[in-house]
Length: 171
Image 1 (cartoon, rainbow, N blue to C red):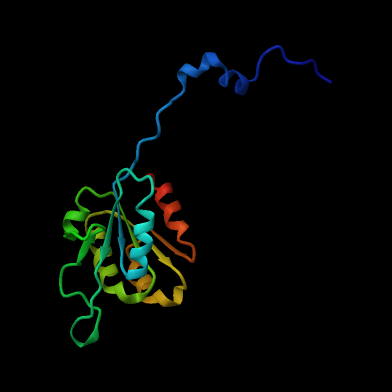
Image 2 (cartoon, rainbow, N blue to C red):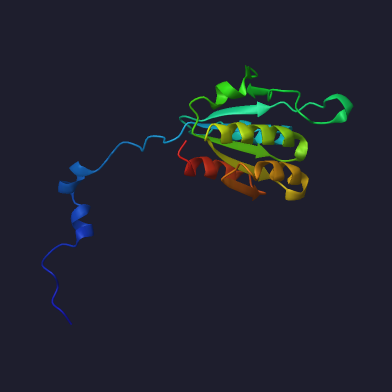
């Protein structure tokens, strides 16, 4: 059995009052300017709930999915984005100064917009994450549209994973 040490451990010394002056006491600044885009009505509802979180640089949008001529969901041109207050927003403006885009889907209705957003993010070297909530079979086409562009593709039944992802991204 060894004799007790006369010196305090490094952990005890670091926790001492005299060392407190060296601690960082301000919160870590957000690291990213994130944009969260919901592709369908259920994803928009999740986005509205998550938007109430403690986000500093995140902005939240919905994508209006309308049926085109012949019943298709193909976009007629520009992706129709709206802020949560209902104001229209152009995709190019939304992506300006953005570090990461998180695309939310719960079904396939926004698959063409998912692909268009993914292509725009890739062209601008913006990291893209896709979150598909619910039963993956309802959104197979959305997953396929996001896969070539998303560095992170999360299939989850739990909407709290969206909150956790944004927290991990430090937005």
